[in-house]
Amino acid sequence: MSAPADTALLELSARELSAAIRQRSVSAREVLDAHFARIDTVNPAINAVVTQVREQAYAAASRADELTASTPADELTPLHGVPMTHKDTHATAGIRTTLGSPVFAEQVPDHDDLVVARFRSAGVISTGKNNVPEFAAGSHTFNELFGTTHNPYDHTRSAGGSSGGAAAAIASRIQPLGDGSDMGGSLRNPAAFCNVVGFRPSAGVLPLVPSPDAWAWLGRSGPIARSVDDIALAMSVLAGPDPRVPLACPVERAAFRALAAEELPEPDARPLAGVRIGLSTDFGVGVPVEAEIVEVLRAQARVFEELGAVVEEAVPDLTDADEVFDTTRAFDMATMLRTVVAEHREQVKPEVVWNVEKGLALTGPQLMDAALARTRLHAATRAFFGEHDLLLCPTSQVLPFPSEERWPRTVAGVEMQTYVEWMRSATLVSATGCPAVSVPGGFSPDGLPVGLQLVAAHGRDVELLRTARAYDLATRHADRAPVL
Image 1 (cartoon, rainbow, N blue to C red):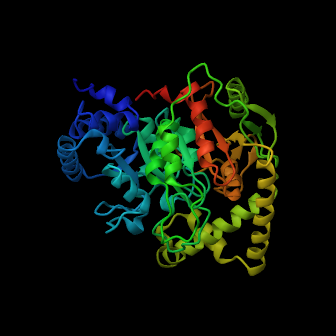
Image 2 (cartoon, rainbow, N blue to C red):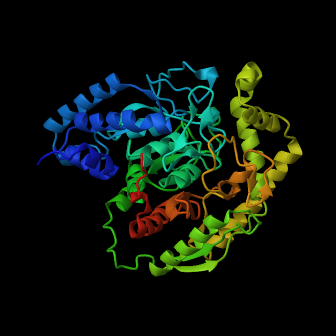
């Protein structure tokens, strides 16, 4: 069997690419050639990849090809030979990890973060790092070290963040799959901006390891890809507890493996028959959302109905969600970054300084109030998911905005007071602790991507991805590649 052309290789999913390598129709080195050639071609325009380790990657590809030659295909790992740049806030042993900050410009870790380690164990070949906002703070990817990452669909627009480098690289066909993280939308917003899929799992499913605060619950690691099918494959190798984090894992890796192995529904099937979906455009608390996004959301809700789902206007009571998110984020930011800000204040962007100082100013009563609010929010969320399987809502409140802006100052005519307020469509969901996925929902009249957000009850990650995959297979908006 002859090897696919380089352009064809770049369109393959992670599942297809690894299968082609395992079946010896293409070598890991040939895939790596295509990967680096694509970086050379498109990265000057989008600035997604900021560090490359070509010699190290080719050595790994040679080892992968030797293993392919000596091992039966069905004994090779699920992502054997798939190249991947990693998020620059994720530690990678022997590869520079800057966190997008001048403070750590030359840092080279001696260990892998858990998400990187599990991807490498599954056969991924690490090729470098992709861009992030400083300390992953904010949903627009720019920093003083590497500059701004631009949207592949419009180079004058933001790619989102904080996993913006990963989303832009995947949308640009540099790689089919990547790792990211999400506290207030950092997997979901860039996925929406770049017409790809971003998945935020339930707490404990993919532990954040190592972490100075093993009990932290708001931030998550997760995968980003061009299809929900690849997300399921990724979770089949990423999920599982780690003894360094005391959070219970509500979904075993075997459940994701079973999902990844399921036969896909036929095109004319109604795979969502009986699924109950609540629909909201403003989250029940008056969140402003641009009209083009609302229009796409309502149109795509009909697709879910055509697939058999029952869709009705409904949303959990999210009255307490802002307090839970804002207080927890401030606490976490101060816990993680107070020393950095104290020692390197002039080198840290003002939004991070503001957020850390907000955390340092928290009082005991504020923390107590947030704990009580989180309990009320949990009860409200449980009540909603007692009557509905999923929530369908906007991923982002805005279309990709001009990349020279630090953050949107207005949304649908409403002034934003802080650099996180324009992301409430994601942060409200983060506060619930529930798993969420952003899937491509189509495009605005001007050709900018729009993402749809699906949310499920805690621990219902597999059911969430199964529904998202049915929609994704029925629409395949991500097949519309950017012109680069």
